[in-house]
Length: 160
Figure 1 (tube, rainbow, N blue to C red):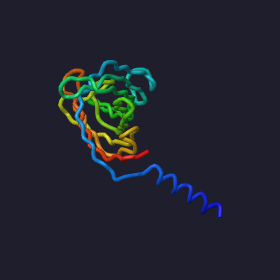
Figure 2: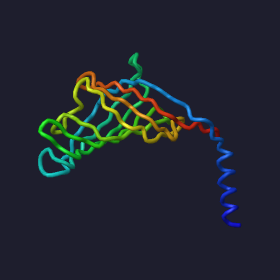
Figure 3: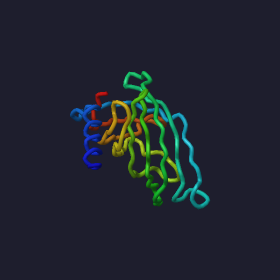
Figure 4: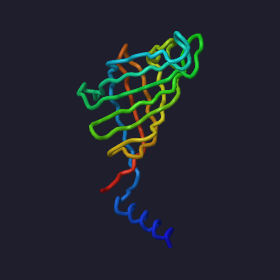
């Protein structure tokens, strides 16, 4: 009986939230990396375990500011020519945001992504109108501090 009540409560909660079909959202902001820091957490000097973090603004293609981003990454492997880093980032647009993550190759010793070399990251979640987001973002560094980002993902539309 208790299980039936809990199940009924769960079903009523879901129906009152009003889940609808998934929607596809695509946007292409330009992000400017305003502040970037490297923290030496591994062995002294550039090494596995070091962290690179930062933040910046997101502009639309016309240059209008539409949000901001935050990121943190950790060096998980090093070669003579590159660092492999696990990256977590949030793209925020007011009360709506998406989260991305994944491992990608970067320039060595805390360097940035190579110029004009696309990197793909998984969209692993979101908030607001992007709640439950799942998909992919492709990020490409186009100048010293500017990146072009194109994201395509599914999100659950919630009616409250």
